[in-house]
Image (cartoon, rainbow, N blue to C red; front, side):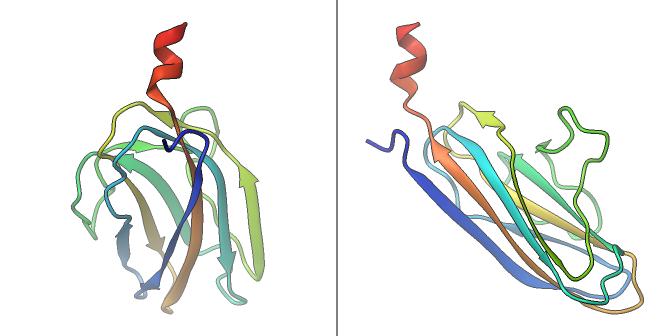
Length: 135
């Protein structure tokens, strides 16, 4: 079974100047929780690109508005995105979804006059649904 197995989902792409883009994982066929978020910001980004992370049942990738679903950084934090400049950020962050068939999405919002690269990963851990039924 998938219980306690971890998988890292990588997202890589570009977002044009003064534009937004959504990157979408493949469908995740089991219940899961996020474990770790990592993001790399190149020199010169100057915190002008924001990365938002979502769990969504919708497979679409809108480019001009936030995706449908749950912003996983919005549950308890003051800031609902991560940003940076010439740095690599890694932090644990757990948000659980009990429904199989969800997607992880990264919404990149670039307010800069230059194009920027998206390089981020989300590590998830699969949940054994029978553990919840034992309680």
